Image (cartoon, rainbow, N blue to C red; front, side):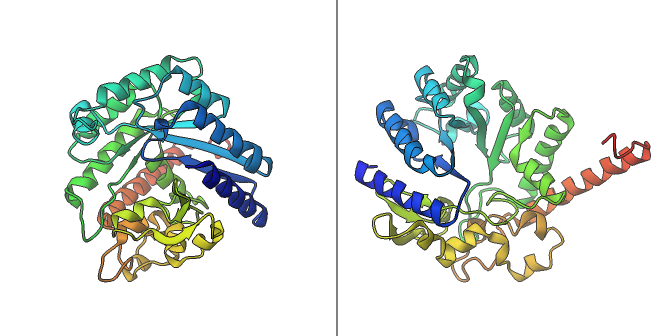
Length: 344
């Protein structure tokens, strides 16, 4: 991102913060790979952000990286600016190295594990670490994924369902994904360690218990996400690219538009409030208040756009019902023992 584009982005972001009186904003430094920039450039970019936008509101910074370039100096930079770090790790070596390779085709698992060790061993590492992010893959035995996560030495994890649509469905079936999700949930639940967090499952638990907010990928409640590309283009969430080539290009740029201009576009509005427009099947579903119709990009079909349930509908239904039944069972067990509310 050039200095001119950066400065215009920050100017428009300041205007957005002022117009809507925002107390907090979250900026994800994503990619591509954010650590490909030089460290002086990165420091200058963040310093400029915090002295401009940061003078008006609390700026929360999160960087998502494959970790390969992570070293002690990067860790100290992240700590200096209170940036939380997410690291991508797609399961055991054989599976990770199938999907995450260098330009020469070599697997990156060993390099990612070395980066996690560097982070774990650094005195500031615990303050910098945010979470480990994986992509759901039913080909991986859940126990193997769980043990891979635990071997990192960290305790915060999350996973995304692959960005697939009805036109480009996932390589696995519902009957493969559903039991996979349930088994992975059971591994987390029975671990019974409140410090271990699997965000995907935690979100479902919170929504079942009546949470008023959610992420964009589960729950469908109001969020406010736009993507700013390095050329200043303003777009909707990048996962929409899985639907159709060019779908996220709304012909807006920080030089000619305000951020709210993009948020007012119907497609961006829908992706930021997925539960606001559900198909007929979802409207009569008994778990719609939890799954929110699933992630908007996963609903896409060319002939009728997003007027569909998620391509993962049945699996989301099964895991939600399983977790709801688990919570009900545990609650009955507690009250059958006569434990008072004040104890809970």
